[in-house]
Amino acid sequence: MFSPRDRAVLKLCEQMVLTNLHGYMTEELHHELAAHFSDAEIFELGVTMAVLCGFAKFLFCFDLADREKTCPIHRPAEEMRSSL
Image (cartoon, rainbow, N blue to C red; front, side, top):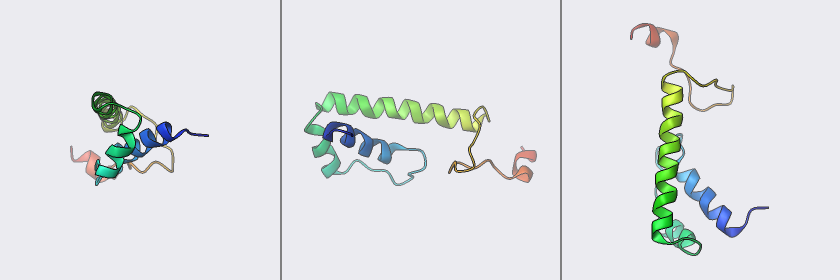
């Protein structure tokens, strides 16, 4: 069972995940996070997530991570890869 604090962080994660191209920190989400974290802590959560998402992108871009069939980040078509 997730606490309200945990759920607020998970909502931020949903906004920052690589597959959410339209992620956005809404005023509502900020208020929900602010109930549990200071502005500095919210910023730190965002930076940490950005680093982790960036590293994930690196792993996929350099083909260093196995993709499950359900992975929403697809490998480029072979013809696209061979033209590089």
